[in-house]
Length: 640
Image (cartoon, rainbow, N blue to C red; front, side, top):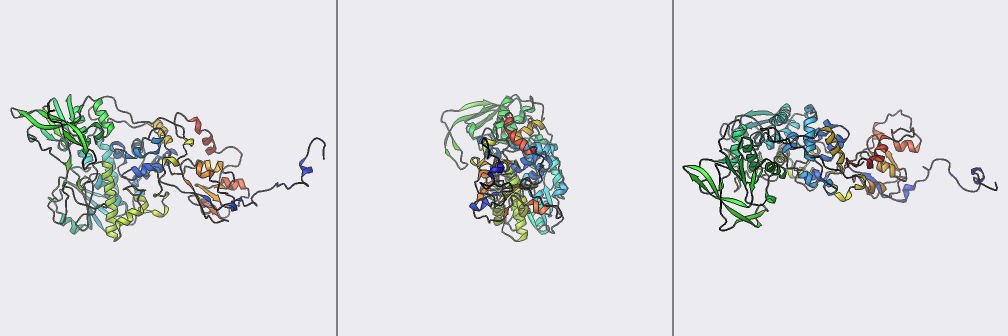
């Protein structure tokens, strides 16, 4: 032994020293608690009435796969271009990123995909044609949604529309500055391409009866919408110069003119009222006032639309209600209004407006537009066997089943929430109910099996193909389970407003590709494994194996320390007890054994097995570079 140093050769006889593989030591036998990879569901999806698979679409978009991201949206929603413009985006209220800095611009993302992605409708077609035929009454969002999903399953579907062009309220009730007609027509075109037949100018109940349809079709879905405005029950409301909001919008949308004068008042605080006021502004009126009986916080209209209206110079008179109309020489000249105060909540859950005695005031007007509510305008009201509610809506169950056998209903005409997304969701639910009716199965049970968390929505794609569906719909990722250390803060990218009032040009622009890429990067993609490799890099036991898709766990070497689970950015990994020793737990699928060639020589290196098909040159993989560079992207705010 040397006086100044000790060599390996000298120490070998004195101590055990392994110069080979440590794979003979099954350290995983110390614990039965092992990690399992489970794609979960994002809270934004649970918040979406339609049930769009938002996080998975963001994941594919992050890889530049915009067409696939759009296809994921269209598995539940046939009208992403429409919803990307007019949806009230409750998904953003549920977004986990909202608790971190600002919610993701999900509606803008949906619009971007619809505007830039390509649709291959043949991928949605089935070769398994069904013999049954289905009639749909009404081509609004509910009717189009039901037709789309039923056609995807191979049913022969015919839509009957009373108006000259399909689209319902989307075509005749929403102004073009919010929803360009070419966007709607393009998406209706895809539904036609699936084989859906559209018959316009036919009013069911007048031109053809419901009993006639029952003789010819195996099932019927009624989606007549709510095209009749409601009066407000005050003296003089039948005077010249008073027009109902839906009637006004429909008249303008078919290209006709309505003379209103210089001073116009609009009664109401919903989307129809705001649309009427901004339409009047675009047609030349300068003095426009919205009169709403509650406070701004209770206005059902989208906040961004109210703000846009105010930027256009339209006034809002809050906590006020019309009491009587004043006429001079047979023409409307003013509205006597009364101030209101808010009381206890009414049936809608909002504070009840109560008049303040002696607070009357006058609003001079030339015309008045009443936009306080809508009801179905249909010839089916006296149809025997079809029940109606006291509010004048078709009486249905949660699954859209009416009191008439084989007849289903949904959308605004059946009392769903008066939003486009909810009408689309209603059509999707009724499509499921119709399939179950024709198959002789329980619709409520089917809905429960494909339900998204605790929401009133379900996954149609999960219903079509549950065996290969990539995520667990019952597990919703809360904000507390997101590893926010992996994500730098970053500002939200909102869709830009166009400059000024330029006729009926679309007021909200789309994000360009660079801005959208930054917004896609901000998304946590909750519950969706993005292959970020953080678990692989941090595993102290080298027990995680990179597969062609996802990861697997070598149970014999995993001690169950849970570092991978606690560090996972998106809560994809969970620890489970009782995993059998001597096995390898697949991640989302053990792709190596299913896809590798049988004659391929087996790799013997432990590191080679862990990296799967990764390069062994010693250079960092692309994913490692991304992890190392995550904190350098402070201006974008996406993380790994």
